[in-house]
Length: 74
View 1 (cartoon, rainbow, N blue to C red):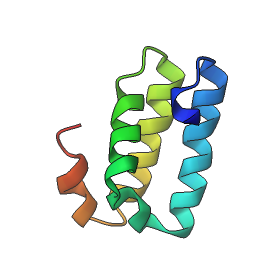
View 2: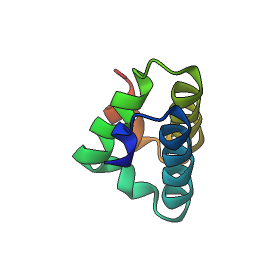
View 3: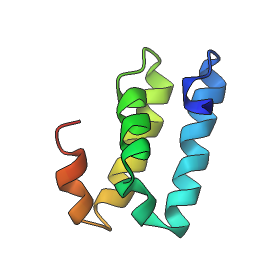
View 4: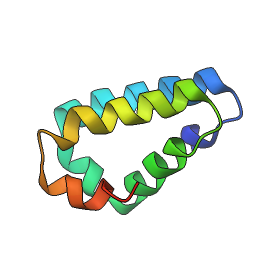
């Protein structure tokens, strides 16, 4: 729900927090709800939110190449 918050700073912080969660368990990115959430933030109107989403994917898709197929279209 926080990823859909109106405040840009909150959405950006949510993506950064999600990045910390994924650092502990990268397999969480395989969940369909996570894919939808990240995809939504990649399409966000705020540059800082999009940057945080790209950083999250760049950091973890390299560690878990099997995730690349799920996120490549995004």
